[in-house]
Length: 529
Image (cartoon, rainbow, N blue to C red):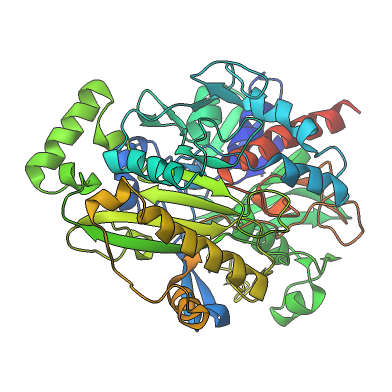
């Protein structure tokens, strides 16, 4: 039996931040357990290889059949390995809207208003633009302007401006609304995952133990306290103990799964799988929210496609050589180079839709190959009303959890998405994008609500931002309190997107890192007291 001060489960965005902050001063023995590998090879570090990271770096989960998507099973990619989804995502640095965090506070999450969380975003960040009231310059997470943008990405921003939709140079300052080129979590043209920011700098310290390709079977719960974990690597099982506590950071799907496998969750479901109930916590696995997304796609003959330098062995090699030598060029692309935020419903308190512009015909999460050149425009519902769940299909930790996002189960989400799709087509029809003479790959009569709704239900899916399944709150039904401490057991904290009571209005990587930063501070405060 091996003993540590703290054990961190999961090396993703939140877990990397917790681990790095707890380990950095060398005074605590800290173990990081990650089911995947190190994720430090050239494919992960090179942004342009992002669409090809489909093997050991990705869990590739599937949802249950979605009634709101006409019975289709959705695809749920999740990062596997150090860095988690920050090792395979599009690297877009977005925090969400200030209203989101003020709403968290209003829902009972004291200490989580925008004024409360902004210093933690700034602490984490090393923005190449320098420090300001909204940005940090000395943190471990590098945030950069893109080193390459496709001409059509700039054309997208200009087409939005032609419709009197304002340009926005910084989506993370005091104004989120508008359209522009995204900043990315890169450093010198390379992907800067949460692992590179927080784990790699402490890797060689004497007080850390980083266990990759190690699966957590369950938490050890004794007399109402979490005392450690049972892990397996191959066929070998081992018990690891934690003197001071365990931090669960396995993500919105796997954190509730691990809780339930450990006897913490809805009692009836646990008994159904033969699991001894330690804490009857009905909210575990509930409140699943995700950004449902629709992608419009246009074929062109005259664009400068992102695929131009990636098609053919010779062009690919030239792009790779340029990146290897200069860290510039098309291999630095995040693919979703540009985007925007806007309000399409009259009662929305903040922008309610977000766009991701891709200068390629990216469909079906890039798994569907489309011949020819063109561009895609993703639009997602930022604050969905639909609520899903995560459950167990098996008592074996190696089996995937049961994922039901319940996409478009609330008609209000469909109304928002319908309006967003229509605005996508207006932007594509405005110059200079219209100068490329784009041909819609899925033409319908956009004014026909029934036809548009059917098209959306046939083609919509996730834009990769599941949250909420271990909800934070001050009420007795919440899974964690506002210090991220789990209810019903001692010495357990949760630090990942699962604790978000409501989905933020934007990409979730930066908020997850902020949550990890705050959790480390809460753990250290508990240690001092």
